[in-house]
Length: 96
Image 1 (cartoon, rainbow, N blue to C red):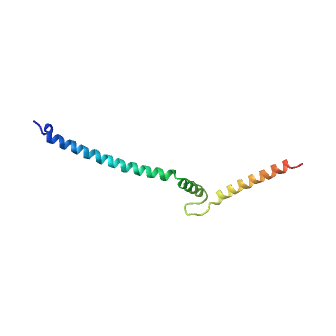
Image 2 (cartoon, one colour; image 1 turned 30 degrees about the vertical axis):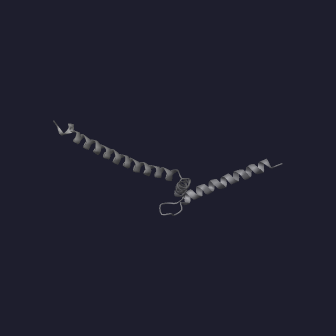
């Protein structure tokens, strides 16, 4: 008769399995808690706004933090163009 079939050996296997399962459950809980913390951080409105602002700032400054004149000039030119468009449209509408 092998040791695997004795009642004492089976109870040790069961107890070990229960300990293994408990350890796996605890590890899963820790992983889940970490995932929830990461998701909470990612969906926080302040975090989203900060990321978007960082993305916009990155468009107008280089890695050293110096302004990128070509990008700034393009946006300024577009803004002036939009204002000029509305001024012209308003003058045309109010010609009466």
